[in-house]
Image (cartoon, rainbow, N blue to C red):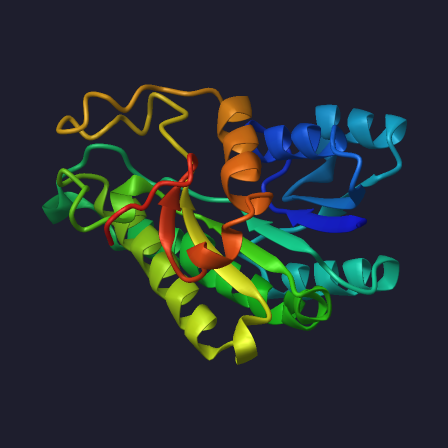
Length: 240
């Protein structure tokens, strides 16, 4: 089976790791790699020049017009979309107390981390339905009300909103023809530190995160059982 992917935030980090990991799969037909600024995505453009399965497209998650344009580009090149990975995100603050986080941080976090992925899903849902596709919404353990130790309020609230959108889309889609899963990618950077109550949660690389999500979720034989759930990169459940 030949599969088609769309990855947001593909110019670096986990997004770039998804691109590289998928290129190693024989079933990969096309990868639409979305980036805010193509000019600065040097490594991604180099990969696309050497492997025609990668198509770099402009995609600004804060701009509805950019999202609509991306949908037009993908629709012109593919009849369906197998997997959408909502990976692009924004972290406005780190350890600021909730009482002092400015309104602009909340607005920007919601726009990029919650509204952008929702609008992207709306735009690509017809293509996803044709493929019986899968949506991976990259969330965070900080979106868990039980696991969050009490920090990064704007980021955490926006990712919790993305989790809620994941469950609602899953409940509303007809016959579960499209699968929606919220995924914690693991603790990949030092800016997002492990929950101090979870000392067993080590840092992982972006490559380990992407490969783990693909192996344990996207390509898993039990992926259907994860519909509408919140899971970690290793396929384990995370409490809401």
